[in-house]
Length: 292
Image (cartoon, rainbow, N blue to C red; front, side):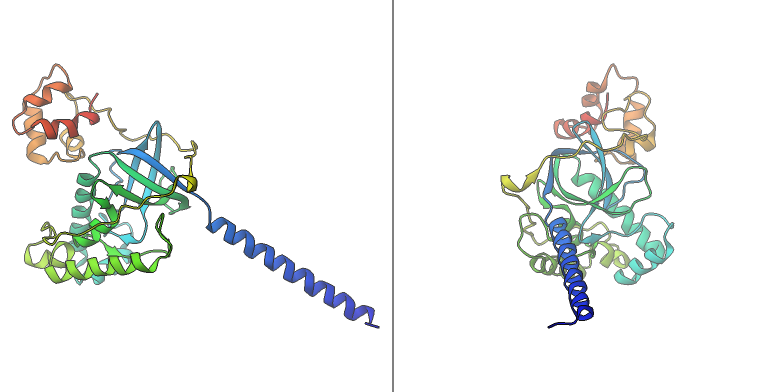
């Protein structure tokens, strides 16, 4: 016969094992949460945007997304330790790292000038904004945005172990990002080429960027708990009153184009942008959604 004291200890041990098992099950269940897919997204003009973190409009909702598995240099000195780490990775100075960050910001703005798709599991990316920042993968018409940044030397392969949507494992994507980084370094482009004047040089070899997709059954509907932005939202610029700085925030509008737009005022409406020298049909179609 088992003594009562020993029987009590065995029961306690068994209960503890059950608790551990349940906790592990709950964690695993959370890790398998469904992806949320946001189609036809638009970039929201916001001074806080950078190469890997930006405000996005999806329908009537606003989100802030942070790219998974990649990291572009900071565009300001608010986090010196991180900037130093980024500069050391590219083997450049801190001021040069900020230049690379600005180039990455412009690259992302250009690539998100047309509607794009976002895949997110609502994993918190810990931003400084009032709006929750979420990790995500972003698919443009050319494929995964993070891969494009790395291939052009404007980001490093970096981040948590997040398996991309529709992919069975992480390792193939990590290997692909590392290959892209090695190729950019070899070609001396982006951050790897800033010392030889090739910061804005693009990759010459064609690359097949991933176009992540999901089966219909694994897609969740997006939540509507996003917070409204207090910053400049998409489609709210007045073509006659927008400042040069606001105009330059629009994908594809640089300093020279902003000056030409201002010089051509007044306009009867945003459709008159077609008449500005240098704005053809393609550019007009890209610019028009950003104006009233």
